[in-house]
Length: 512
Image (tube, rainbow, N blue to C red; front, side, top):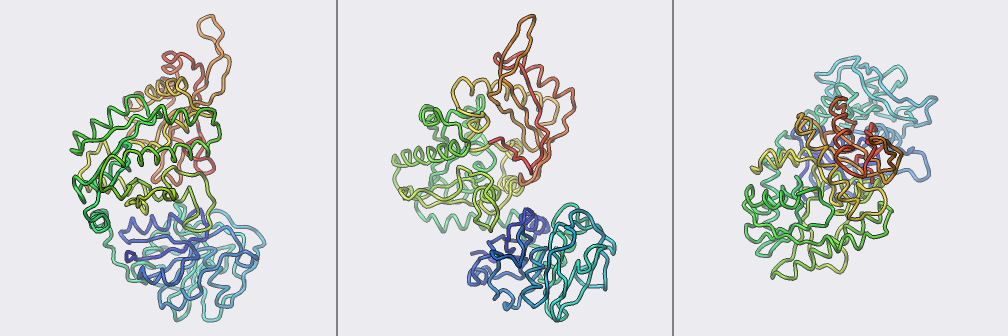
């Protein structure tokens, strides 16, 4: 286990990941672990401080989440946020009750006294509240250091120990000076060095891969996307020609994607890609399947089967590498805490029992924007690094309902037009992700003097930083109009184009 600056115990808040992101942006290494993490595993990480996240539960509920109480006996500074504050108050003998009014939204934080946690921040600063319970009575030994109009105990601290708690969320964008508060805790109080960066991370991962692999070989599944390309670059640096990179054409790719990926790896990475055409296998297994989760699982399982069959052609392969990201892990399964599963990802959850490979996932604890920085650190070209995210299941989850060859061809043509228009206008590089979705909903239209009854395509373009949250992109209407006009005029079988203006949350970026 790596030494970390700050360990965040996750109690299920939708904002937990932001705590880690904000600290990492300050070059302080931070890891999120489940609230139930054993005290032994926390000690192994040798943290300099602990943060207790927010969460949707109530500390007095029958099934409330509680960490190992020994965290308060480690002699480390501790900070509680929202639910974490209420846990601290309860643990030390304070009183927590349901609030008369749930408090959501902006509030002004005022200081009761100058305190090092508030260093270089402003009295009256805007913070973001999101809670239904509140601390009614402070535990013995604690003092009030900040308040708002609706929260008399908006910030508290132990009088002699380094234990702090906020009723608000310093990690969210709306808490205008929240990053300074987190930084004060991590740097001033915990003494964390600000020495974590992608250069260090790359060296650590390369050394770890070499140590793990030894003289064996690694099968690396690549798609040509940012994640798998960065993994391949790390492996090439670490083990050279013991890397066996395999690109599986699953029949769910965008137009000419296979040729582009092969050329990119050969010319940019100097790696000869092994291409396996398994499109017939994937499409046969997807026949008649309409449920999104079943589609994802079938695609994921088939990838593994194809990789395993290919690996048998080479001696000495004992590892499978893939580009699993932190966001994949968070959305797929509650491995980091009591968060709800949103959707499964084909590359998350380990390998089936029948496989003998050991998994290598060097990007598992970092976010997409950090992966891009890592790629630049490794010398990958900007055009590769700037490529929009493309899901492992490909177009299979951009067709509502059953996946078949005809619909894939229809979607490829629409998607190509949309991307052409975005690149021509400069909006491809200004946005996080852009794609089209075939809704399998037909509507009446008129072309010339004839009635049509054809498909509807949805255009989805979003702005985001790491994919955990996203807002729809405010693309100029003339660009959207050109996209719609071209798709309807140039793609037979489509007579209507709509634009998705939902944000994440409550929607996800992909439709399935």
